[in-house]
Image (cartoon, rainbow over all chains, first blue to last red; front, top):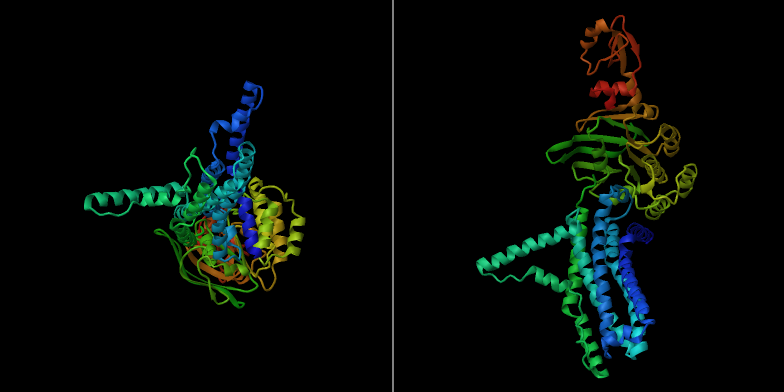
Length: 282
Length: 285
C-alpha cells in the first residue's frame, strides 16, 4: 500500500501539468464570457436579463441539455489530456532516460503498470467530474434563477453524461495506453494511422472480394462517441415527458456499447502493460 | 575466493548483429570490492544491465542461487544500481526524489540518508532537471547509498563529478557503505582512483572476460620492466601487448619471473596491467 501511494504521488508530481491543462481551456472560456459581459456592459450601460437567458428561448428541459453539453465539451478536452497522459506515463520515463531509476526499485511490474494505467484512466475522469460538476452547478443555478426550471434535471443530465463520457475517456485512454505500449514516440497518431491502414485494407478486400467485413473505424467511432441521447431543443416539454426522457437516457447509459467499452478498455490495458514489460532498459 | 553469490554463466547479448557480450562467465563473492575495467564499448554497461535483468540475454544470471529474469523486481530487494548516465527523474525535486525512493524501497535507511544528505549541499526544493550534471550524479549516489542492500553495482558512478567529491566518494562514502557482507562491483575509467579500494579486478574486452583475479596477486605476478630505448628488442622478445616510451626508456609489463640483465623493475599499477592485457593507449583506461 505504501508503495502504491508513493507511486501515485510520483505520477501526480510528474504529470500534474497534463492533468490540469484542461483548466486552461476552461479559463479561456471564462475569460471570453467575462469579456462579452464587459462589452455588453459598455454597450448597454448594464447587464440585462436578455443578455444571458431569454434570447435562447429556454424550455423546462434547458438545464438537462445544457448540463449534457457542458459535460460533453469538457469531456472532449479531458479525453485529449487522457491521450497525452497515457503516452507520457508509458513513454515519459524512456524519453527522460529515467526508466532505470524507476525500475531499480523493488516494485513488482504489476504495481508499476497498474498504478500508471489507473492513473491514466482515473485522473482525467476525476478531473472531468470535478470541473463539470462545478460548472453545471453554476449554470443550473443561474438558469434556475431566471427561468424557474427543474434543478434536479440539470444534475441528472450531468450524472448521465459523466458516466457515458467517463466510459468513453476510459476507452480512449486505454487505446492510447495500448498504442503507447507499441510506439515509443508519437504513439497515438501512429496508432491511428495503423488503424486507418487496416481500414483501407479491409475496405479494399470488401470491394474486391465482395466480403462484408464491418468497418473498423466506424465501430471505433461508436465506442468513442460521447453523446447521451439529447432532447430536441425548444419543444414544449412537460414534467412527465422530461421524466420519461431522463429514464430513457438511463437505458442508454447502461447500454451494451458502454459495457463493451469497459471490456475493451481492460483488454487494451492488459495488452499495453504486456508490451511495456517486453521492453529492454538500455 | 569467498562464497559465490552472483553467478553469470555463458552470458551473451546481441544488439542486432553486434555481439556486445560473448559467453561471459563470472562468479562474484560476498564482501568483495570488485573493479570492472574495459575500454569504451567493451560491454561493461551491458554486462551490468544483464546482471540486473534489464536486458534480455542468452545464458544465465543468478543471485544467491535464484535465477534473475527480465525485469525481475525481487533482485532490487538486495541490489542497488547506479547507471553511467544520470538517470534521475528530472521532473521531480531533490526532496521528491528522496521521498519517492523512501516510499517504494523498504531498504531505505533513514538514519544513513540523514547523515549523507546533511553534509551535501543539495537544494531540496530544486527540480533535478535544474541541477548540474555533477549534482545529479551526487544525488543519485547519495540516494543509492542510503539503501541497506548487500550488492551495489556502480557503472561509472563518478562521471561528471569534481575531483573533491570523487575523492570523498571513493575514500569516505563508499568506505562507510562497504563491509564484509557487502559486495560492490564498480565499473570506472578512473582506475587510479579505485585501485586502493579494490580486492578483485575483471577486465572485459570485446564482450569477453579476459582476466578475473585478486588485485594483489595480479600485481605480484607481474612487474614493469624498464630498459634503455636501444634495448627495446629485448622487451619485444617477450611479446608484450604494449610497450611504453618515456625519457629514453622503454617499458613493458611482463611476468614477474622474467629477468633481463641490466633492466630496472617496478611494481605495476592497475592501469599498467590493464593496458598490458588489453592493449591500447592510456586514454582508453
